[in-house]
Image 1 (cartoon, helix red, strand yellow):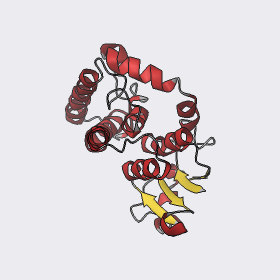
Image 2 (cartoon, one colour):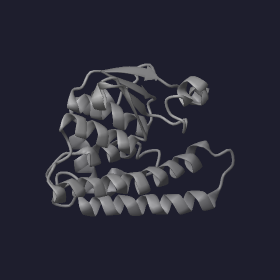
Image 3 (tube, one colour):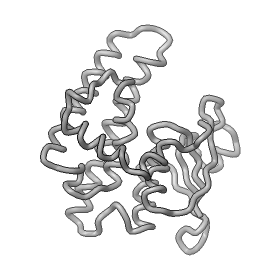
Image 4 (cartoon, rainbow, N blue to C red):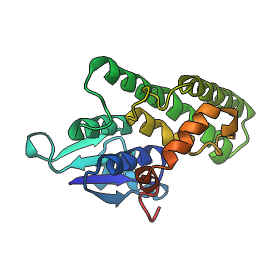
Amino acid sequence: MIDLYTWKTSNGRKASIMLEEIGLPYTVHPIPIGQDVQFTPEYIAINPNSKIPAIVDQDGPGGKPYTVIESGAILMYLAEKSGKLMPSEMAARYEVIQWLMFQMGGVGPIFGQVHHFERAAKEDIPYGKKRYGTECRRLYGVMDKRLEGRGFFANEQYSIADIAVLPWVARHEWQLVDLNDYPNVKRWYDSLMARPAVQKGMEIPADA
């Protein structure tokens, strides 16, 4: 059994989609970040960085409970545990890891800054909007080129790389991006959003 500590954010949805895709049983523990629950001593004991998601695998290595923080690490851990969505052959494996790192180092931080400056900033900061909006659109261009003639980021194999990117693209309207401007991304996005596991994982926790 996996204990999932999460909220309905792009990073949180990575973990819930992954758990739905691989079929491992899990219990959801909502962490309403708008109420600062992530800063409570109880949650800091699970994740010292006060971020979601986090998991506790009650049947971890050696049969003991094991905690994993950071969404990318959670995806890799669950892929290895289940033997799904991450190939074992070295070259294919690193195709997945490269694009997972692309999300972790580029898509997540940049798209998150767009969300902040367009939706959350307490004052209008045109420089921030322009800087991060321009880089956001550049990253969409990179993704569109990568997905040209490919079903998924790691060629024709659906993987944790796709799961990592998808919840960020799902908020394209927050980024003031029209997916019709990136037809390969749109095709990929529509295909993944039709998956039952994705649809269910996107709604976890149900009361968020």
